[in-house]
Length: 427
Image: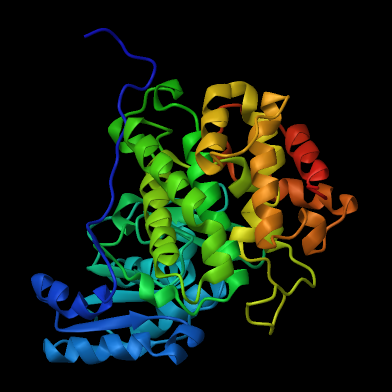
């Protein structure tokens, strides 16, 4: 064979999916296939109070599966909150499996618990470089069933676990295919009580997942890797493209309706749950880039911003808001790398949009119109930052080289500075 210097291989994976109203009530049956006798249900206080975790525990009992509910998940988890969750699980274990019920925070915390109760070590051993040591999980993990209660992160489909490292004021993660849940159980009825602000923020996470994955570097443009060197994010590819396109089509149909009529519009909620899962099937393999890289320091260095619809006990920028705030400017920057993809994405997200006189502005204008309609803050200024804060945000973005490497037009530090500066206000 000739010596190959460019990548010729892409990988794609996703867990089996059970989707539909009432699907949560069939988890006991699904777990019988794995021979489990005792599982930990991982959730947060808000979801626990709504009753779904206890309902799940009751159904497990009918299948002679013992369970315990841990409701200590922190919304937007940190290294501290995850370490405490792992400590609890280790002390109360052993466990035969896990069920995560909640948003991405609960599912990602359950992934960390699963990893660190299945194998020795601490969070920093496995966190991505250059922040952590990027140790590879040495063997299989226990069964993990992911039950999302928000339509946003797509964490039920992905092999990533995201958290804030408090000492560095930066968001990062653990990425390896072994973290991917064993089964995704998606029940749209679990999202009917979401406040409109949470629906909007989580939906922008879906939007950015689909857009960033669709506009990521094509997989053959990476340097050829040995099998053991290949990372989870392999670049856009024919399979991830299909899921991202379908996700954007569903967003166009139902995003605004889910925000405006979410308590009554079951079809809109179902479409948003599918969109989140489909986008996860896309970006969980191809990757995300600049908006997510920028979103990590925006969330990690929050000052006094307390978003409506979320717990008010401490400042936070919800992940979906954080990644969306620089997206219009990021896609202006990346347009030259793949104009046809940016234009196709704009047409999928808003089929009725008038064509902009400047093609570079088509996707940013579609995004800003959507963000205004659903009440997303106006740029990073809307969550408390000013132009004077940009030099402090840039280093946090530049640490996300795993994400920036996926951008088809690799940004420099000056590029990131310009994108953040122009995103103080988006309209």
